[in-house]
Image 1 (tube, rainbow over the protein chains, first blue to last red):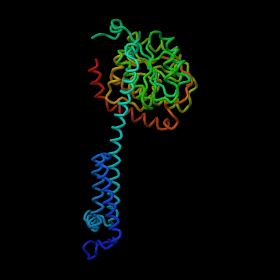
Image 2: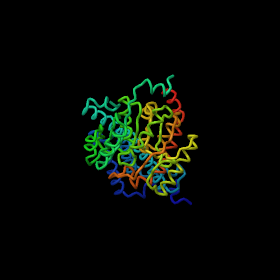
Image 3: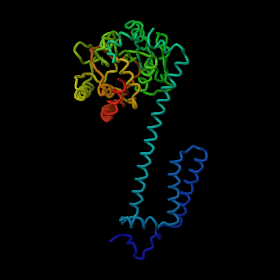
Length: 137
Length: 255
């Protein structure tokens, strides 16, 4: 027997209090507003901003229709809806880690190359004869 | 096609000694002086890897050309910087050695000879070959080094005893291979760099050298880093093996 039998007449939205829904809505709205503000100041990458906006929108959707995710959980065969949230969070976190790790590797590589070129340019500038001296007299 | 021996006779030899250094102000000056005494006419290039001490001033005062990285980037980046500088300057023979006094400059003649004679493309200074003089190496390090050497010997098809040595000599072809690699192993340029050369068809040879305990202030391979050294190197070796097709194609282009 499932704890929240779908279609049995139980109100699926009944177990989220109104205060909680307001709080969740403002969390989502706050996250979206912060993301847009950062994007406007060009201090947040567009893909990252898109992700935060999507998360904010999901929060707001949950606040308006709390039963939606429960229905989604039952539809996907999960009898205990919080598990769906947990899986969703883990998937999003792993995706973010992979994305940020690949970005970090790319930036790290470019930073090293830049440091090398900067060092060589600095050495060439400080001594015009560097190139001739390096190879011997 | 010109053989290395013919090429060495037609092209004027330009020897560069590349010395990556990080906070080695106490010893780098004497190392540079001893290198200049042992290989007269060679260009000594010290790559100052964002040192906080007077490494740059000491090296310059001893007669070396100094290339300074804007911040501490690690041994691999410093090495690549030095190799790139030497390559762009037209060096025909390049020796890499440590700034902490571990590699004895009196061994420079021995390490240069096979490349000068056209017998090898890459020469490794080994502390384990008969005839070498070395400080007492810890048991753990010896075991790790032995295993690495066995693995590389199997892959390379020739006996290699010291695959973590930074005391190396290379000709221009090998230098070009290293500086134009699409993914130079900047994190751990040890066994994997040798493997790159082997897989690209370079003739690798080992010679016995003299090595001392480092006299410098700060090791470029810290204690915590050493804990991750073996798994990191294993991954690095695996990544080189995955590059086999690319390396063979690159070697064909360079020839």
